[in-house]
Length: 279
Ligand SMILES: NC(=O)c1ccc[n+]([C@@H]2O[C@H](COP(=O)([O-])OP(=O)(O)OC[C@H]3O[C@@H](n4cnc5c(N)ncnc54)[C@H](OP(=O)(O)O)[C@@H]3O)[C@@H](O)[C@H]2O)c1
Image 1 (cartoon, helix red, strand yellow):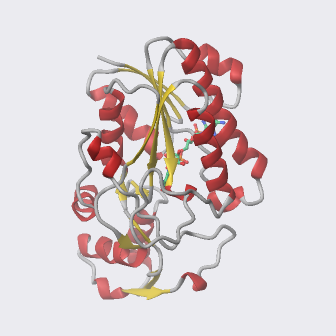
Image 2 (cartoon, rainbow, N blue to C red):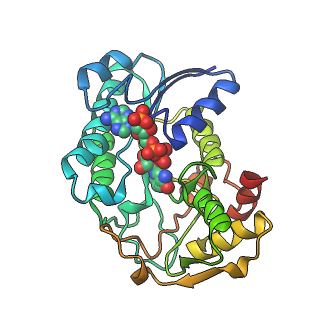
C-alpha cells in the first residue's frame, strides 16, 4: 500500500481523493489549510515524510477575486507548490500537482495537448502556470495534472447551482459560447489515485478530464434532463451577458493523449459521469 500525503484535503477534489484512497487501503495523511499552510516552508518540510506520494490539491481557486488579490493567489499557487516540491526532492518523495486549463489562452478550436503553448488570460491562470514551472524546475519527481470544469453536484459548483435554479426559476440563461470538458470530481480522484500508484520519475505533464466536450448551456440542459426537468427551460446566452472580472476561456478542451499514451485509464464520457453523479 502507498503512503499518500494530501494537501488541500478539505476542498472539492481533496475530499474525494481522501475518501477514495482511504477506502482502497492506502495510508493517507490528509491536511487542510488549518493543519498545514503550504506557504509556510518550515511547516511543509516537517510535513513531508520520505517514500511518499504527495498529492497537492491546495490552491487559491477564486478566479475573479485573484484579479485584485494577486499576492495571495501567487503565494498559494506558486510559492506553496514550490515549497512542497522542494520538500519532496529532499525527502525522496514524489509529487502530483493539480493544475488547470486556465494556463492556456482559451482561443483554440481543437483539444490542447500537454505541450501546446500556454498563455494565461487571468491572474489565477498565470499564478497556476508559475506554480507548474516552479515544481518542474525543483528537481523533484513530479507529475503535473491539469484538469477543467470540475463538479461534484453539491455545494455551489455549476451542477449543484443548476439543480438549485431549476427549483427556483422558470427559465435559466446559460452561456453557450464557452466550451470545455465537464469533469466529475470522483472520476478525477480515481485517475489521480491511479497515477499515485505509478512509479513516475522526472517531470511529466498530463491532462485529465471526463471525455468529450460541451458548452455550459449543454451541460445545464443535461442536468435538467437528468433530474427530470424540461431542458427547454434552459436558454442560451452569450458571455457578453455575464461579464466578470476574470475573462473565461472560450475553448479549453484538454487532450487526453499523454495520459492514454502513458498507459493510464481514460475517464468515461462526461455525459455518463453526470448521470452517475446525479443518480
Ligand atoms: N474546480 C475546478 O473547476 C477546477 C478546474 C481546473 C483545475 N482545478 C484545480 O484543481 C485543484 C483542486 O481544486 P478544488 O476545486 O478542489 O478547489 P477548492 O475546493 O477551492 O479547494 C482548494 C483547497 O485549497 C486549500 N488551501 C487554500 N489555501 C491554502 C494554503 N495556503 N495552504 C493549504 N491549503 C490551502 C483550501 O483549504 P481549506 O478548505 O482547508 O481552507 C481548499 O480546501 C486546484 O489545483 C485547482 O486549481 C479546479
